[in-house]
View 1 (cartoon, rainbow, N blue to C red):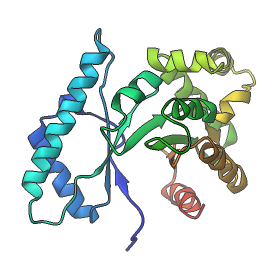
View 2 (view 1 turned 30 degrees about the horizontal axis):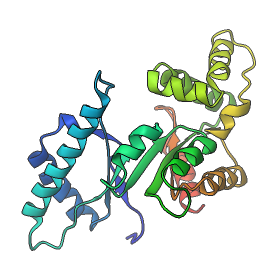
View 3 (view 1 turned 90 degrees about the vertical axis):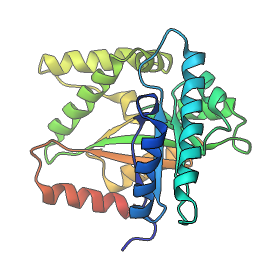
Length: 244
């Protein structure tokens, strides 16, 4: 049995969860995982009053921690490490100190570096994690299509579109999606700084290192496969990632 691997929730919309119920579920997950569950939380959909929404999220987190401590008394179980999802510097600053770290997603390393820099840089900052999406298929064209479709899907979310525009890849996403729809050659260029299709071991190692250099402490590789993909292929790629 592994003594190092952890399990995580991705990102849950904590405002949609009752703190007592969530605490009891976290207790179960910590027991099953031997205190190695990691909780990712976010606010969910944008609202007209972001400041109030963030305050509500932090209040929910505080209530959940209180309930967990009550239920866990004497069990040896600890409240899971908690990471708050954010793309923007303002939110990162607002939640700094209220969790074990912050969680980034689908952004280039330079965006991560600038966000971390706004929190104090390499020496004075929270733990930073980032989901790194990689797309696998036995066919390179399919892997590239999956990547472009995911970029296009996220680009329709206003907060992500704003981030993509700020880092100079929004137009490239639009062009790649249009080329895909027209069965033309898809050019990824800068998008390969954010995500990879069918990377080799060397490409994957270099990709992870660029995020580590950008002060991302916990790069979380997030493999995608088509639903019809053979299990043996999926397992082989996951094993490849674990050995990285």
